[in-house]
Length: 360
Image 1 (tube, rainbow, N blue to C red):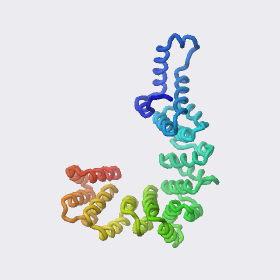
Image 2: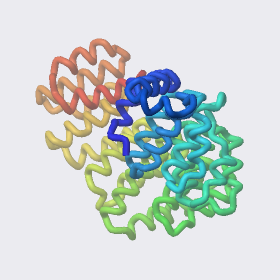
Image 3: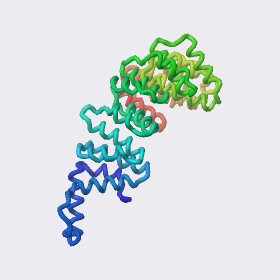
Image 4: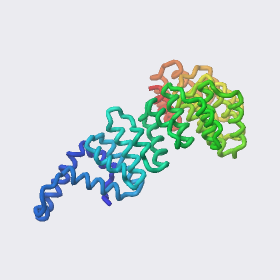
């Protein structure tokens, strides 16, 4: 196993051929008496063999780190190596190779035929999830994969949501069937998607809430936060009232409720504000006020002054946060961030930084 760090390899290597020529030249110089016994050695081919052997002999985590480093090079000369790894015995090499070849393609999109030819179901599931996350799919590719008979329900839902995010319309019958899944995570998010499509049965939301209510509180809380995040990530605005109702379910942990509220603020702030007001009526402790202020800041939403005024309690820190939030709402960003920096408050600064990324 090669002892070198693959992550540092990526950082110091700008051209694979330049690296391999230099490395092989150094090797030939240091072993001249031995190398002289053999014919000419192609530096590129020799280094490619070394790379293949080094990555292929590592564990999954090391293989993935090495492959990510190689993929970051975006070097077309890696194509033969990636094609070789498509037939590796190691699933991580196969999946990374499919992704790497997509990154080398002029379109930057994944080859669905390569995904379909991966030998294990786990390979395909991982490749689909990665392709969605990396933006390697367009509507045509998504529809092609949705037509596969052996695609598991979680991947069907993932692709259907991705299609909706691109402005497409997933097959309503497919999404309706997903709402009937025995996997609560799938059923609830599929319900959100169906609501966004405007095709949900009036009782669909009630069934999803009943499903969640029957689960242990810890599981329920996790699915509420996950469903809110999925709806926000895929811009399922039509599902916002449904997500708001999930946040109000009983026995949802505060952390999960806050995460869900943050997602709802990003998705549809006008739906989230009443939820925020209701939570504030229940708990106006200093800790809760600070956490709600942080969620508002992190959402990147330009909330109106009335929303920030709800938080005010005379405390210097809360008042300063409300002043800064009001300034953001009025598009006085420079003033707002100057105030936040002056606070030197770790949680507030972290939330403000996250919010600023959303504001652009």
